[in-house]
Length: 138
Image (cartoon, rainbow, N blue to C red):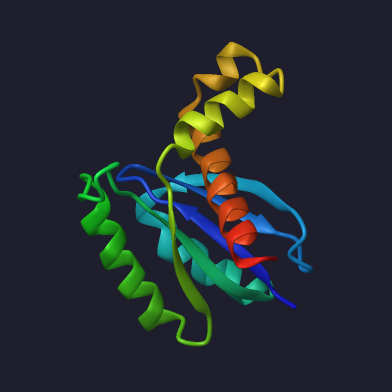
């Protein structure tokens, strides 16, 4: 059984989350500069048993594109080509940033730490991953 990795893609930063090998728990992993994403995934896939990658798909409430929809679609195609043996899936990411902020507040995170966008990004990736797991019955 392999892990699932979730990506909350941003033009500057990208949040990452991962499951345990049995796919029971989704946990925040880290936030990296977006230009390092492909190299990071490549290295991670080589060092860990990864079964699939879940990519947050940004759309507006009316299903129209956001400013990051096209880059995410390009990344989706690139990941499919680079990792043909992995399942690459898209997951709705609407409201994940707001949910991440609520999660940080409910968890008692200090205001200073909540202002750190890197924390929001990796928690958003965790929410994307949890949503995928629930929808998929994992």
